[in-house]
Amino acid sequence: MTPLWQSTCADCVIGVTKDIELNTGRFITVEGIEGVGKSTNIEHLSRIIESRGFKVLKTREPGGTPMAERIRALLVEHGEEELPDIAELLLMFAARALHVNNVIRPALAAGTWVVCDRFTDASRAYQGGGRGIPMNNINQLADWVHGNLQPDLTILLDAPVDTGLDRAGRRGEPDRIEVERREFFSRVRETYLQLAGSEPERFIVVDATQDLESVRRAVERIALEIE
Image 1 (cartoon, rainbow, N blue to C red):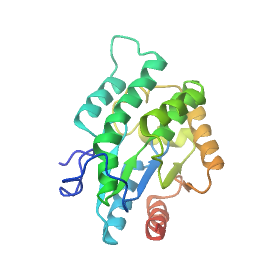
Image 2 (cartoon, one colour):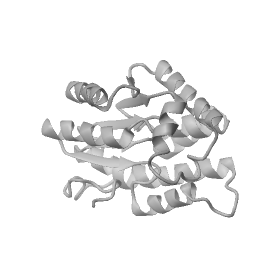
Image 3 (cartoon, one colour):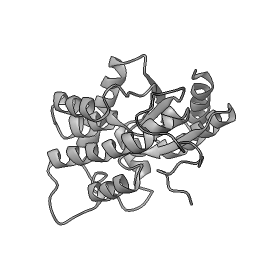
């Protein structure tokens, strides 16, 4: 099985360096708390975009490159050593720096559309809203790590915390972040909705409490309307 962080089109970034200016690729991120159906809908979204004749690279955060995936493992494992909130945030951005420079920018420069499971909005929601790290600190790191690279579109799959966590609980053993209390995820969700409200031109909020087919139709409409 092809890893989620690995491009589904082998020629997407051949011959492209990270210094090339962005061409025609679109950068689409999918956000939301646990259990809202991001993975399923990313697959559907990517298929629809590909059906329009575009190359698509599906990727994820934290992760997206071999080294960034190793950082991801540190972030989600139940280790013996406590991971301070600031260390968690810095590891997220270390993985993001690898991802942006080695995968996202080259793909976009080659004209490939990038569909990413979470990006910096997740840091704002989880480490900002959830952990309480000041948003200014997170935005400073974002400016440093990816500068003017911002998603062209962010799809926020939204569902109440109880609904999301109940669904996520059926997937198997929870990781280090997934075991947080419901109050933590309530703050995360609230922050996501605040972000969507502050940037309505970038965010589209989809009601993820609907049945899967209804959510798929909503995602399909979005994919067909992206220019």
